[in-house]
Length: 542
Image 1: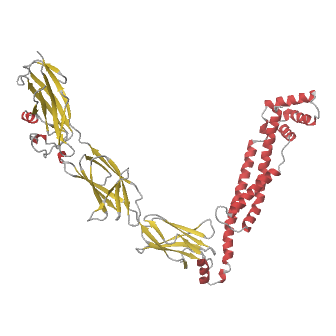
Image 2 (image 1 turned 180 degrees about the vertical axis):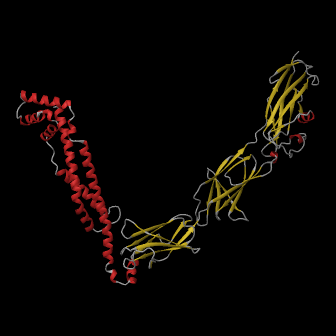
């Protein structure tokens, strides 16, 4: 059977009323459980680790308080909810209360009167929100009171636990107070352990020292560090949450040295930080080491001769751009000597770096710039320590491309007459300069004729256009047969024009004249390299 609106409203009011009563009960429970929880915490022995004594006591107290506060609160009945609704809404004239009583007293089937009363109360429930009879403000107030009571209980237990540890340590030291100062120090020293003891750390890192007193708690403790240069510094050690455990952190240890933990028993001196602490632990050694580290990388780039540039030294760089065929002398300046120094590419192949005979902290190698690559710098010292940082050295190679030749006139196959003077034109461009350029032509089936146009352009006043500011193309007046050891610098552009005299070729109708342009430059290996254009055709007409 479906729930009526009246029953739903009464159930909501009853739930809010129960929640309010539980909050009141919890507030009272936290206050009443405060003293028993403190007593149990002081009575139980102190423990360390994740499950400390106060944590266990607080967990048990919280569970008891939650369960007990709910156990003592009785579930409000529908009649109680109805009374509360009638009290807050007098205009209902006991309609809700009457409907609840009629329904509870009805032993058999509902009568006409009971149905009328219930229907009337259900109509009233639809017209108003009765959940407000338990004010939200009152529930928030008791929620805050319950929370503050719980915080008060937690704070009291934690404070009592810390006080109990100090009280316990004082009681442990009570018999020692009857001993001499030397005997009391001996008791504390017997149970003292220092971490990390003798240690090796990296230069510039921090050192944390922990002192554990097993047989008591000193009044104060401090860490004293003496460097190899004679510098001494002291710092107070703070007591941790663990009983009898003190710790201090020393920032940026830059030199070898020794350290001791000094402390004062409770009965030895007053709690005055200006007084010297009489007792000290054993002396421990701190050894500082350095990992291999790349300080600076320099690259000496020697370009090929045909580039006509002086060697260039680039300092403090890990990225180098070089012309194909250049010699790259890589020099790595390190912070210390190493036994292994290599350049490793992505495939795992290693290029060894050899120590410089004049500077053992510098390693170097020579690389020929044939292909673009990236290497990681691997360093390892005599103790097997490697570099903490990964340094990548990249080499990007600029290719020495072949010249580009474009026939500009006539730019296509054409027809010519046997007596015509046929003009052909082209343009050649190279990135580092042209050694020679010209045209070859002839009648199909006959010997081809080759004509160099470089000297012809120079005599006619034409210049080879150089792309760099220090270009000296006007001095390149040698013929193709001369040595290519001369300097050229580019890029360079040459405009080629030649007139083919068909009459001198004794061209006849139906002959086919072929021609193409060529351009010579220096290849990456230093040899002469010739590039040819597309072959063009001229048909001799009748």
